[in-house]
Every structure is written in structure tokens, then in C-alpha cells.
Image (cartoon, rainbow, N blue to C red; front, side, top):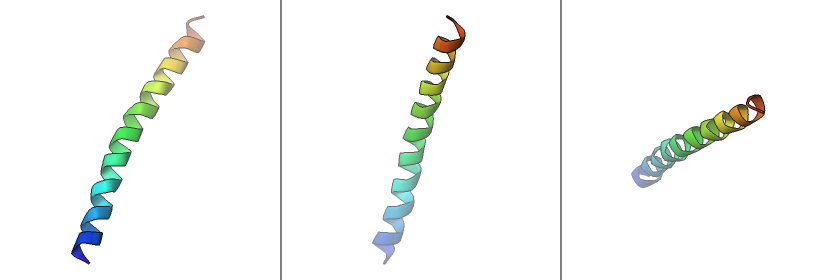
Length: 37
């Protein structure tokens, strides 16, 4: 029970932490590339 509960919160923040910066970087690059030219 403890292992299951501790494993879910540990995986959630890690995935969100990696997905958020990557998505933000992608959007920043796309925005710059579309606005520049």
C-alpha cells in the first residue's frame, strides 16, 4: 500500500517537470521561428 502510494506521486511530478519545460521550449522556438520570418 505504501509503495503504491509513494510510487504514484514520485512519477507524477517527475513526468510533469520534464514535460512542462520541453513543451515550453518547443513553443518558444516555434513562436520565435514564426514571428521572426
